[in-house]
Length: 112
Picture (tube, helix red, strand yellow):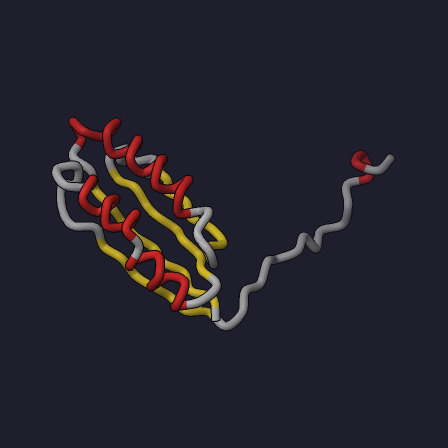
């Protein structure tokens, strides 16, 4: 069963660049972990100090191994003083995923 974790993080505006650097570094590391399908931080358009994490895992066990890792502990320690409040995390389980297909007729201008 696929597991999707969504976290909402609010940084201290004066330390946004430090937070963004930490998130970018950790994002690259976490994306290479076993069982990780996606690990992406994004900044909100309306509030550049707000970041959202979307991570997708092959299983709950893979996600739990991620949270038990020394690198995650270091990441948590690095967040000290960079967040305006504790992050909020929600974990979702999904037994299937669907990627919608384009059902519109092809534009004749796109044909060769």
